[in-house]
Image 1 (cartoon, rainbow, N blue to C red):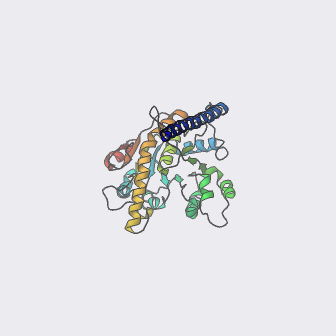
Image 2 (cartoon, helix red, strand yellow; image 1 turned 180 degrees about the vertical axis):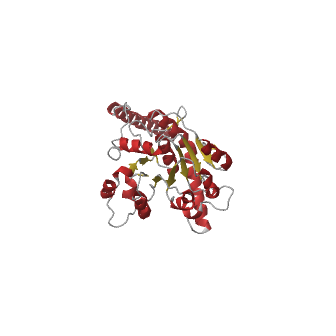
Image 3 (spheres, helix red, strand yellow; image 1 turned 90 degrees about the horizontal axis):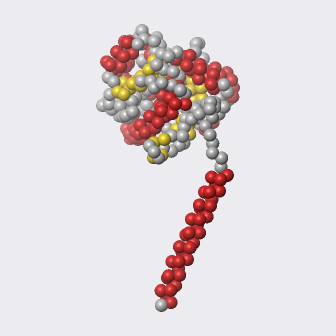
Length: 316
């Protein structure tokens, strides 16, 4: 009998302790919400988190694009067909964007029509490609380099490189954003906290393509077309175009392909949400976004064939 009473008393005590812990937890939550002010979104976009005069930098991006179609040249193997057909776009007034290891795309494709990239983005490891970045910024005429300040501080940079001097020297050609770890929640549909009026150039830290695409829209492109936007392996033996990808053993290439697919899945979930927020906070009308990769794994983007895409660009 004593054993039974002890067992009952033990259960009562455990419940009492559990209730006590829950109450303490609720008290802490209540205190948190009682002392934490509700942050109201500002009426105007706040660009003070970024480089000085970032609002003017966005205006320069818009002047550079000048309401033209933007073509984003990515590294997927499907862009090889553009290498063969780029001369069909010779007389088209297009603003060309490049991402990361974009110099081979410029060398083998744009050079055929005596064109160059107007906008280049590299945020993953800019220090590892500093010679090419400096060469790009030293070119005469207008162009813009997109990155984020934190990436220069986290990654290895050349000896003697000074970020403050770099920013001062190329000030008029720089646009920096901020990438942030974020969560996508399932509450009354999917939602993202960023970008926002308070942080208009903060983006989820994921596929760099999603950020470059966002900036093309923010820059006022009349149309955005992506070449090489495969998002993974398509119906080719190659994963990347020429030397834009790793020249490693097959096992490493396959791990790269797996990692790329993870990024693509995140893009597929987040990109529609990002565009919805961008259109709202920047007061922009939705723009057509075309992916010229019919087997692409990027599901939110409209896919067209090369014939259809080139005909569309030539008609503008």
